[in-house]
Amino acid sequence: VLFDLKESLARSLDLEIGYGSYELVRGAARLTDRNFLGRGRTFTAEISGCVRGGGADIAITDPYLLGPRNVLQVGTGFLYREEPSFDLQSFHANLLVKREISKRWSATGGYSFRDEQATNVKVPIDAEAEGFIRTAGLVFGLTRDSRDSAFLPSTGMLWQGGLLWSSPSLGADLDFIELDTQFAKFFRLRPGTVLGITGRFRARHILNSDPDLPIQQRYFLGGATTVRSFYED
Image: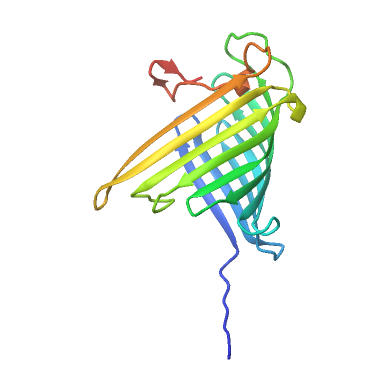
């Protein structure tokens, strides 16, 4: 018996270019190795940039170390971006484990770390802490995905819920709980026509006596010009 086994290419390079109303010209280069060190792990390195800033990220995904149905994800990166109201520098790192519960359900848990600094603040706000401010803590997420396709769905539903607990006892400067949940539903109206409905809710609740969060940790309303009368940031 003669076996002729041909492996698919393990490495790929993706190049992206685009334009946004705020970021203007933007682009990215992403290198992916799906057989990192010859052990079936996935290594990803990405460099991105635009007129308003740029960044770099690296990540490793290991589906074998923690046993079947468990995927270990480790990543770190840097970002510099000129926001409308301030300039942001950010360093981040994550250690996550994704567990496949069933065909439709999966859960993610782990530790998240982020150092962020806001400079050149252009709006009148209360005195902000100087230097980098650290968010660090435990994360947990739950996902239900019944879509018929992850790229071009025509039926099904996607629901994702996430929780972040940032606490000084876990290495953070800030003490709060973040809730982030989103929902999408797809209906096939007729061949070639799909209706999609989606929504998202995000909130942060401060756990100590701080009156508010630093500007780089806040959520903003507004679009490239205006959204419901709010300017960007």
